[in-house]
Image (tube, rainbow, N blue to C red; front, side):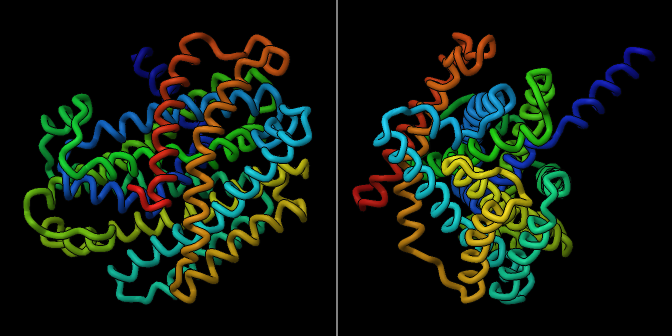
Length: 412
């Protein structure tokens, strides 16, 4: 009895640590992830679940390093990048790279976040996306304008929990083939025509701007290295929970559509067509999850852009600071305006794809380099096994970056 009580207390204590990493989860579980996971399950069954398992592993490795950098050095990744180089050319080149790839990239992707959720909700409810889009954008604005990190964190944690309950419950109700699921988790395969979906699953989960976001967010929660243990618990619980959400969507789409010949082009299509299987409440259930995904990611993209840009320029990283507010307002305004008129800023998105394609491996390599700097981190530098794991992730990041660049150039 006492042992059971201790276990319950231990679990509750772990739940209390959830915070900064949940913001990372809220950032990568956006409409794009929901749609990509839906397409993966509908077109390839359970075969690509392993790609999501790898993505979660890679995210945990990189985010742990990012969090450790923030907690121990009390610096954001943008600041660390700026101060790492003494050569003016290298320093200002890195600053320009961060501002362009993260700042402009987040503005472009903010439009995608809002439009993705709005398009899906339009398909489900019949209410036009140019109504849903601004509504999500305004909700994000009001939350960020409070200037309270704690309020933002609590709302995002709540949205992650609600998404988890929605998508995981849907996956269980649909009665999937658990044997095939386990096989898909641990036996990698790349069915014909699935290579882009595999890359997309990794690319929507291992997100460059989350490394900037996390390094700054952890400093709001923990003030010194004594918080590292709690931070790691936060990362494991939150990121794995995010992975379970994505895997649940793959499972649901696979059980409902794989092999049926039904075409799924978006998360909205998936929600509507689940109704015959799960009853009339199915599409509303899925709509709620999709709305939560759109709202959560529409909050985190402007926040990440503000943290990264302010850090790179040496500005104050505070939600109440005027310069900090200006950055996230600009990013959010871009998303609201373009979602309101129903247009995507194609040239900006193409630029963002190219810039982030370059940035992801560069940031991953730089992060690995910084985490071996004893002058900055002392006893908290990377251990051998962490460097090996980080090296594997860097190689994958390079592959993803090359794929992104080649796609933009029209070669792939």
